[in-house]
Figure 1 (cartoon, one colour):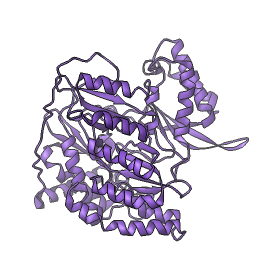
Figure 2 (cartoon, one colour):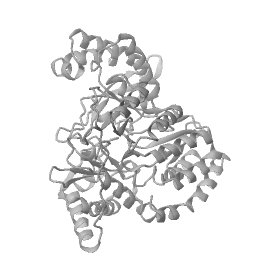
Figure 3 (cartoon, one colour):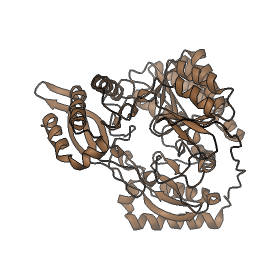
Figure 4 (cartoon, helix red, strand yellow):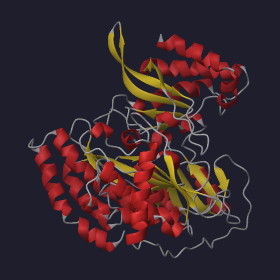
Length: 513
């Protein structure tokens, strides 16, 4: 983190400390404190006694130094829960109020400024996790994501946004970061340029983004960013928070009106500002000699003899003990670092064959198959605004599925959100679930609405519509029955669903009538 930003933000911590004490003394309501603390990347958890701190790391780059800081902080402050997020950050949970201020200050000094990690600010900039090492990528977008992250810090104290602004970079059509439907997305092209998409997003009234510029040279990315900041602050809704995200400008201005407004801002920025990047780009020089045998969690990199090891802790929950173990393993390994994924997993990249074998063995406690790699937000047991307990649901479903010993791929990856905010990205999942309440003859009960058929791939994007809801207690049984049907056809969900969609509808009807 650039030192000038650090010095700019450090004085704010005294006010944060004061407000936190006021909250715990009953002088601020939960809503009042949330409105303030979110701007520091921290929220009180459900019940108001413990806290969460969200650490920013552009592109999900969890370097050895950052991991070491997290490991030592867990020891120092007795932190017992780490949660990886769909925005490629890490949340430290169950923090005591007395520890929150010193931990936040120390994390800032260590280069992980949480300022703007929540609230109405530019959020953590995302990038394809294997950027720079992926064999089929168009080019490495990570340096530009990090530069964008640095630049956006300028606006945290200088500009009042209507709501949050999410910016991301995608290096291939896989579109892992959802660049074509974020507030601002940069999509790499084969000719080493970016196409720029604006005003998309998930959540209530989701929307695909609009392609607002094409063939943008990488060194020019700050101009489209500044243009989006100006467009959002000029035309964004400051009166109604429910309509204050960028995607609602498609509604208020119309598609062409929004494009005209954005192009006007872009032309002005290009004419009046000097924002060209002059990055010193570096390549990985490490190489491996020994070949690695094939494994579903081993991904050969484009660098000869190097590999990435995929690891998906269940539900995105990384225990402090596992974090410490990973640090001890990678500390002596040249150039190895962790890249957090937008689906709450991680890649340990730049491993030679020997290193990859060690890390593969030490990460065998994670997801065993595609289904167990499901995404789930922190859920209502922790989150103040949560409705459904996403983590408890995922645990119950995995427990039920393990008893059946389904083949890999029989059940799809789930995307589970505890509320309409879509922190679990339920609208782009093959099967998505969104927490809510369903009225029954016995009274209101926890339930999850079903979203089916979502897809994030560039050019094939589908934002799934909400179907009927299934009681949370019935979902494990529903998935077991689904898995049995698919297994009896000796198929996988991906293949089966195209041929037997009516069978899925019939099964859903049994639980949603």
